[in-house]
Image 1: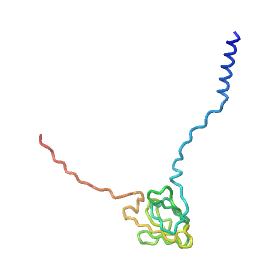
Image 2: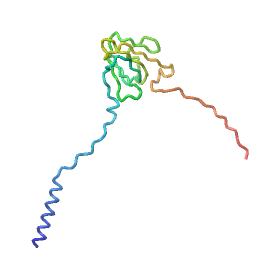
Image 3: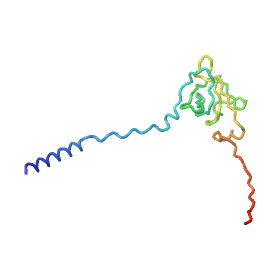
Image 4: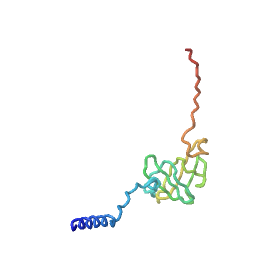
Length: 144
């Protein structure tokens, strides 16, 4: 009987230890789109070309094709902005358009010039990649 009681107490003790342990931490989940939306200040004297990912009256983000993050430039009152050769304001630029930002020579974090060239068809829809192609197909019945 002592043996049965000892086994019962040992089993009860092990069960208590198992229950008293903290549950394991949940597995780490990968960061979602946070990395994709990350932007870094411009540090290059060279112009940047790509898709505009954000624009406000104070800042513009541009992401080069294949880049992991977008580059941002501060806008100054003298930043020259053109769309199809016409002078525009930052509020007239649309997210999704493609453009080139040239930094100021004395402050590469600030845009000296922003040049955007878009087709008339894309002007209304910045996410539109290309015009739809219309293909005409004529079917001829086959005699059996």
